[in-house]
Length: 223
Image (cartoon, rainbow, N blue to C red; front, side):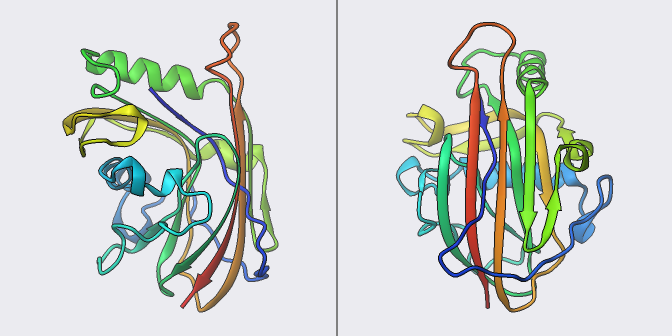
């Protein structure tokens, strides 16, 4: 099981620019939100742990696997809990993909899990989300605005590398299911953007490993 939470963007070079987000249920850049979510997990899971942007506190690795692609979106990432402050250069003209709160279950991490078990685990995890926040420039989105963006995907294929993220040591193909709250923005124009997203979940049963909170700040420089 992979558990993840939000990000807050407070930057040393504050960016006042704002950008709109695509409505829930729309098809940003010709793909459904679920399509984008599956592509995000395929990208993030295939990067070794020592290079993975999820583990990068400063944003140095933010563009790994995203250079020289024809993707219409640039993926930002969650962290493994706590606060992160990152700076990242992004090509102008691309939208941002923001995992405000997210989880992924795969049969690489939970060996022998059935597809039904992957679905059930992902749903149960995100059913416990109790806070969601997002700010892009001067645009503020609260829990009630973001809750309608929850997506639970169908099962999809991913490939882990050796020494992958989430403790996966031996790489290979895997089945995965994702759930969570994801936002996609309209294309960025050139300039600086301050993006802050955060989220948390608290499980009803006493399980300290289940509770999670994340707060991430990005200074985005669109060039």
